[in-house]
Length: 220
Image 1 (cartoon, rainbow, N blue to C red):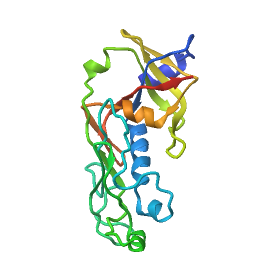
Image 2: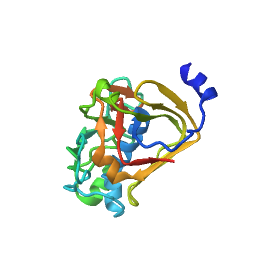
Image 3: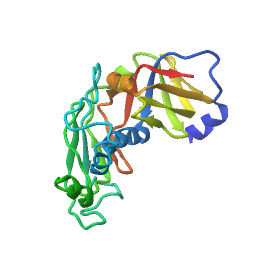
Image 4: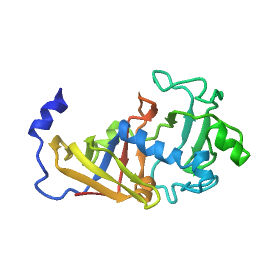
């Protein structure tokens, strides 16, 4: 209800903002899902995979290192299953460990093409919690993306951005509702600065940090 009310009174920023960005769980699900998809057998077979096993995804991390596991089941998720559409038993697979791509995953068909073991089409994603506490988050101004038209990600062109329909700018004391704003930056820089909350949440097919703090993203 608060967000509905704030949509009506939100305004465009009166001046350019320069601070860290906060992304909520819904956008994090998309972000980490895109990274994991880049390690799918189908991407490897078609030579469209942006990463290979052993590649460092976070080149120079100054924040929390990313660890991502693709799972068949997550408690509370309607995407949970014991097997995929091919009848393959789903095998949980850690695909990113401490910012490094450690394993591929995918269905029986592309696993056979590559001579790999099928994990099945894993629909759920779990991300390890980070170290960012609420107290630390509120120690400096930040721009919290509450509602976006959709997070735009282009791993191949190193881009992250999107239109923000509702945001809160925390000035160090209070939250100010804003609208008519976009964010834009280099994905690699954002990943290197990433701080993940130490509190987790579950939404849809995602279980992991409830928010992330990212530097080096422009607010326009």
